[in-house]
Image 1 (tube, helix red, strand yellow):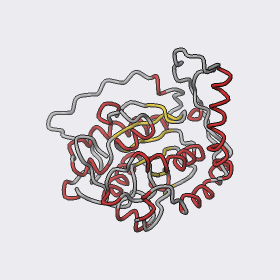
Image 2 (cartoon, rainbow, N blue to C red):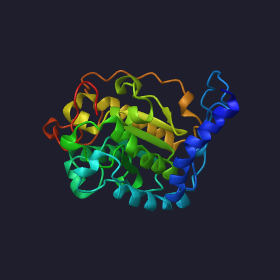
Image 3 (tube, one colour):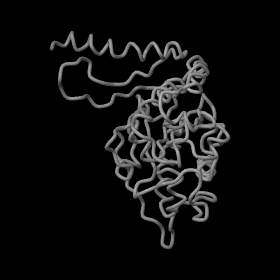
Length: 289
């Protein structure tokens, strides 16, 4: 098969998705670095895609999210639609510099129609305040928009059905940084085999945007001793948004200072009380969902 036929096959595969985005009102897609041709060869290092070196202009693409939201609210592409009360699409500002992506709605989120409003969401709000941010200054979304039964982990086909909505959200908001909360978000957007315990704390690339994987707040409710790691991760995101660093994806990881004698975790106001464990989102196994 020739390079020309490969390119034609790729174009035909992409056209239906691009047409869906056009009808949804999305007029701007991120430029993701990659090879300049389909000829096999080493993948070039991630070039500086640039959005976090200048002020984005999200008004036009963000307006198209209303159409994407309407389509999501009518979606019946997977079995999750059968038990939902509401479609949980977004919260916060569509012009936010930081986007937080979680796993999926829990019981309280399904009832209210907003992401992260249960116990894990209350902890996320306190983490944001410790970063110097309010909820209405960030953008919050989930991998899946409908609550999985019993708060189970979303199945791969459910993630695949919902992912185009999330990709449209990322393309429209175009934040300077993304925070991936838990292994479900990391695996959906970074790779199906990644381990959150291994990749957390270092920026990776999601659609040309620096993304920081870290533990899900629900995991912190069950494992408050891990607060320090999450606080270190979100400090890096905060510092990136406040700075003009062009390419954090190639920064060498700074050494982590040892904790002071007698210090057990970061100072996140009110975060991680064990009594709150077992809320709307649950974490199972050694890796936080």
